[in-house]
Length: 105
Image (cartoon, rainbow, N blue to C red; front, side):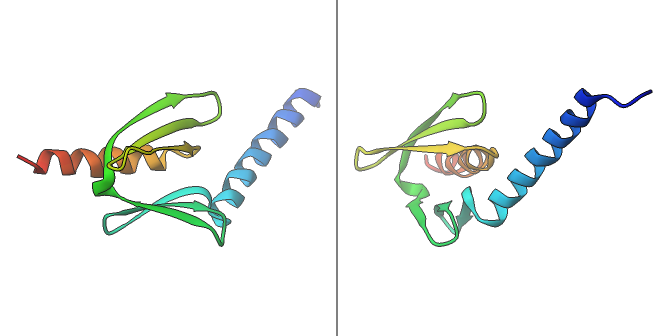
């Protein structure tokens, strides 16, 4: 087992990817949170967008290489296009929107 430049670079890339993800979480870049029935997209420390879960008519996902693109159709006819890098948005939508639909008769 000798020194291998490929192994060294691979290890550095892995560390860099984990640091980038942790920093994005701390700075709240493209993170999604659910408070009561309001879905909030954090666009950094000082900017956020929110929608009510009740406003969601339907949603669908387009899987890409580095993230998922989530399209959310609202009651007023607008369609939001949000990026989900960490699968937290899809998890929230699967839990809350599906639960709301099963509660309605």
